Length: 223
Image (cartoon, rainbow, N blue to C red):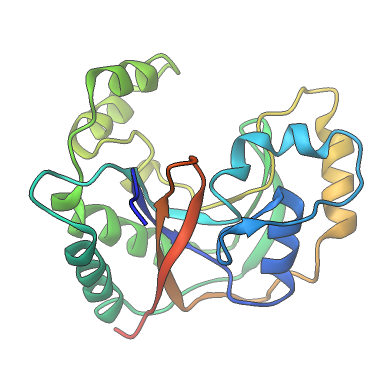
């Protein structure tokens, strides 16, 4: 498979949460196939934006690979990060409204997850091709702070390092008058959320020619 971009994700291990996420979004990133969605009016529309990525938490945002490097070398580098990084823990996960969309976010101290994400961003940066002017302009059009703009310039994405907030996205941006309705729909279908939340592995994912991401390989955190 030839991939247009790569990303480092947290993907829930096989189980109720992963099954829920695949079904809710309509795409199983781990199995690289569509998943039947619940028969809820409007669900396909509100999940259209995150569907292509699958149910995941971003650690290193999607990037094009730099000239002269390849997926084999990238895979070895991700394996090295995982081998030297310890499992990351938070108090749990909670359903929240984040910037106008629904997501699962950490409960309590998420510093270990933030450190892991920072390691992925920094240690794998040599594999990232520089963001093009169109991408930079598109990111800036969202209205960035000075610090976010500096992070965009240096790391190709504005919401990394101290601007990073780990989350597993469940919808695109929702109309304000519908957010509570969708919150109730998601809460009613969520499985029991983990307490504590343990991140014991990371995953390399690739963007297929059809624009959807799929799992390439999982790596246990053994540092």
